[in-house]
Length: 99
Image (tube, rainbow, N blue to C red; front, side, top):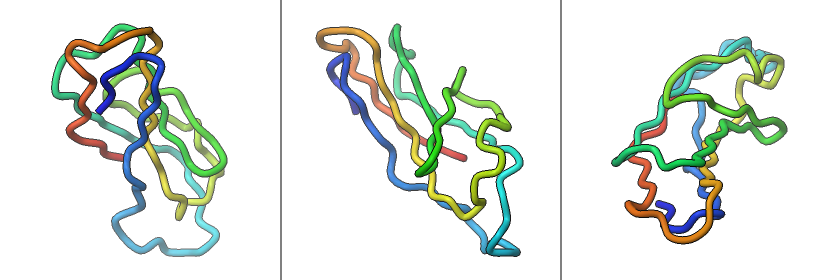
């Protein structure tokens, strides 16, 4: 939850749900979806990140090749940031993250 603009929030670490076939497997594309409890605040920026790289997400769901080449066994995090000042009304509440 973010209740102030200019603050950053992170999801818990996400990993592939199943064992990967090879230790040297690489990402070719990712799909994501996140859900908010209320409408998206003006200035919301959401990124999906590995330890080495982040991609800016343009909407609440989609796919990208922006992490192509990263290790497939990477952990992922969603990063949420609202580019504004002052309190958010209502606060930003993320209710689900999927990748």
